[in-house]
Length: 421
Image 1 (tube, rainbow, N blue to C red):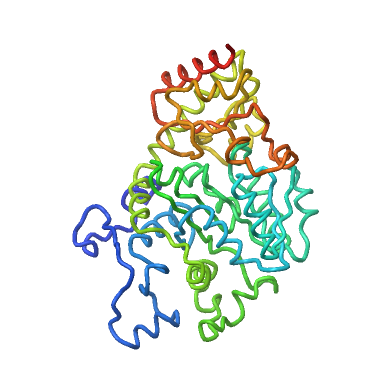
Image 2 (cartoon, rainbow, N blue to C red):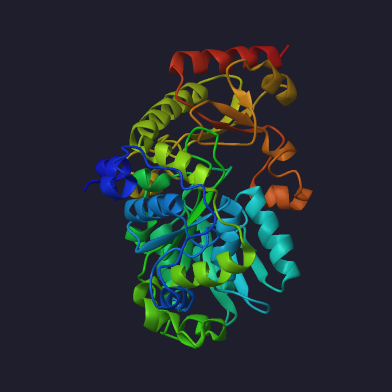
């Protein structure tokens, strides 16, 4: 199946769904076992099946299979939020004394997770305030367990050099984790450029309607966990499952199998089946929505670029953008819906004058949303960290929705006028 068909009908088995055309919501916690031996085999990871909805659920399984296929991976794990997906992905690789290398221009919530929470459990994160691959390479040492990047940085909308960073990570025998939330697999499939693990906040574009919190991890199945001694958690016996060795038992799906059997089991941050159902509905229209998101965003970006009262515009598909060539390489169908811009006026007045745009911290919604990062998503950062993240006092992040583009432009123009009064 091609992307659009997979998004709409991938992995549907109507007979298993009692011939229900729409995927049922499996709102259960437990499952009956056919026999004692079957239960034992399930708990020993010797057979596939459902044990308890903290680990697996048929509603969650559907979006796991479908998103894994859309990204080109071998398997996926649904989590309760994008943040929990990132946390599980990192903890599946790193522990006390280990290190991670990432950009300083990542989402503020991820920055806080990396700089504060991971630090509390002994994982050190090195932030690179540069686009130079040499700076990333200089930060890698024998304790480094992965590189972490965002396909399109949130909120400064920087397009990552996925292929270059993947080659660098593999040079040192570590995986590249890519947060593909803003691009979605419709615009970019990072695995095709060498990425090893993909994470998403399904809360955003994948569900698309601002009504379902969730996250997901996708395993490419391409990283060789046995190439060095950095990842013994996959290649040596796990005593909690009677000595199972994940690479032997699950082959190229070892990463996602361990994440489920170990971390979802212990942390319990599994996705609600109802939210999985809503995400499934969103996936069915993902390709249609992304086309309109990209079309509207590019039209608005071009309009703002010529506006006399806009200090700057950040959008990768503008020919004036320093990321234009990278966008053409990695984002062949469009550059998503995020636009960054600086208002030459009172920022508070500007936001409060908007009538169509919703002032919120979400993105990827069918509705247009405006966010003031310095006062919300990046509020916890110090002045130095804000500077490194590229967050200035005039910076606005807009997630452009599916409304009529003329209404969107008129709302922005009116608010700019009021901000200058």
